[in-house]
Length: 308
Image (cartoon, rainbow, N blue to C red; front, top):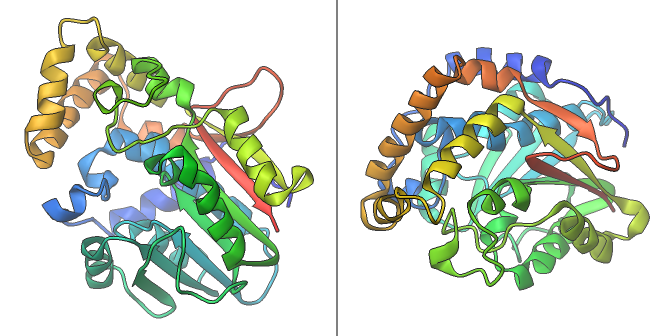
């Protein structure tokens, strides 16, 4: 499936106006503990890392010419992003699964509508019928699994999609997330930038994994780039990485205080960086682009595209 590689500004503009009328409520602490609800909890990560996966997915979805299209997201969190996709592709039947009942309860309460369904299920092995979806989407989930489970995750996605269907998996590029903080080759918990990220992938590693599941001619990587997000994210991490005076304080706040307090501290730090670099979350949203993977190019986030 071929798309136009360019700025995602048109898709971003659609999301911006949709989101103005769909202000997300306060995310319960039980949902926040699962890392869900990024728009209200960690807006920098939302607009620069999580949301771009859905903007890129929307571009791919627009290429599907079927009158009826069936979509599933593995690890749907609050369900908010699926509500946006349903708004943009109203002919679609969309399912969202998450292994936590708290997230699904929130999704059903806030975003369930006609043609949009939510279900508690493990993404590695769902109870849904095999080969029943045209598109499988996952945004920032695979890095929450240990490396050994990454293959199981992709195999589960392949099982769900129909022949000729597409699997879209978004995840951070290790070099520009964990790698900014420290290599941590042994994946030690106290050495992680984001503790729930059990294994972040490099571009080559993720592609090799996908080729093993789908085949060499059935998998590719698209690069998701955002200059302003990268600049602010890297600047923030550099200040608290191991060896800096702030590292001990950062780890204490990250590991010991309630999640909602940590989110507030993070928001304050990001707000100060927005002022420093004279930008805004809206500008960061509109700065997203999808780029064809070519030799020498890098992206802060990766979009794995596989066809069955």
